[in-house]
Length: 212
Ligand SMILES: Nc1ncnc2c1ncn2[C@@H]1O[C@H](COP(=O)(O)OP(=O)(O)O)[C@@H](O)[C@H]1O
Ligand SMILES: Cc1cn([C@H]2C[C@H](O)[C@@H](COP(=O)(O)OP(=O)(O)O)O2)c(=O)[nH]c1=O
Image (tube, rainbow, N blue to C red; front, side, top):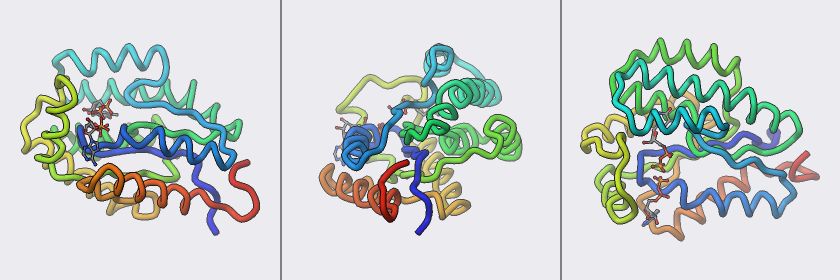
């Protein structure tokens, strides 16, 4: 059996429902002995949270978006994610680099090769062990968002943008099938939760102990 997954990311278009399930994943993993770091992107450190505010609310071009999220990511990795993994904690991160490929790459049309170079420089080979991709039709996600909150800069994009973002996630999933698990996020909350928990349990199970 493969080693337990320790760096777990949650991805999907805005309103797919991923944030609704992170707490349940955290509880399930803590019950079997994992020590956790729960975090998010853009954000996760004081500096990265400040960059997040700029990113979400200021107008900028796609290259600036990409540089800002990778700048925030670098600080987050160096100061937060890598130290947590080094001390044996499992990291649950609400979005990571797949979001940059999906939003800035597929959504904005920014050069994927440049994103790949930034990914190499910033991550130095670090990749999530497991990525849960909450996949749902953009019109369902839009209806969920409308019922939940006022839109930020990206959430105000039209549905064609989210179709492209969704296709961007599909491309990333196809390129890294060992890491990605697609969750059918169009189901009821209960059915999504059951799929998510079954996936996490299967992918973090190890013979003997649950966590180091
Ligand atoms: N499977 C679901 N069915 C119906 N509503 C959902 C479902 N999942 C999430 N929601 C609702 O949709 C809204 C957006 O969910 P959220 O978890 O914040 O999405 P995300 O983090 O992916 O943007 C919330 O009001 C949430 O309660
Ligand atoms: C991490 C990341 C997020 N984003 C976008 C996606 C979201 O619209 C926004 C903030 O993400 P998030 O807080 O996860 O939004 P939500 O609560 O809707 O899930 O930032 C990018 O465009 N590129 C990135 O690299």
